[in-house]
Length: 250
Image (cartoon, rainbow, N blue to C red; front, top):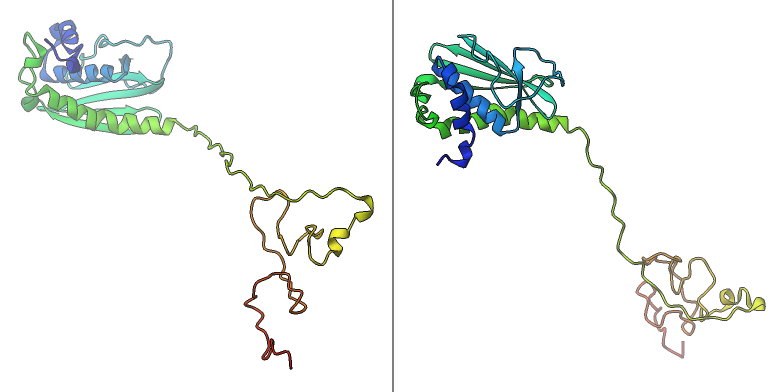
């Protein structure tokens, strides 16, 4: 049974075997089959670099594809872009070029026909190649991937814009004591020296914060006015008591 990787190659050979006249014809047939396997379609022969969408696309080799004894020129399309395949025969060597008509990028592969093809006549096409899998691997690495992958990258000019994500951090909630509203008590909190009502200043020295913000904001520092009216009930490292601070007889 024919391998799934070579599906369609034997059928194409059966259709074209009577037109084979030389080893280079068999190599071009293999190239055409592998292009079809990768999604390309043939749109005729020639060197024209303009794509006419009215031309029928086909998986078969076009009429007269091997009419020239020294060279080949076939046209292919994929993703609505044109590729020109050229094959040049020099002694026992076939030089194959694949041109992307839009970017003018070219890839190439060179095959020694005497070492890669045993004969262009036979019953089974797989028996005509010395190592068909090796030739397919070379076509993939040297002819198709260097030009088709780069052309696809250049054609995708639209980039997806990055959508900023909303922050999932919930602002810290602070519980403040409830103070009933008194019309005649406006400003009372500012006059409270102990700050028991929270203070009415924009920057509260006891509880520095900004309304609605989730982060702590340091407020102004208040220096104590005496030993008995400290606002904070812990020593302040910035203020050292003078000598004899606790001596009641001084």
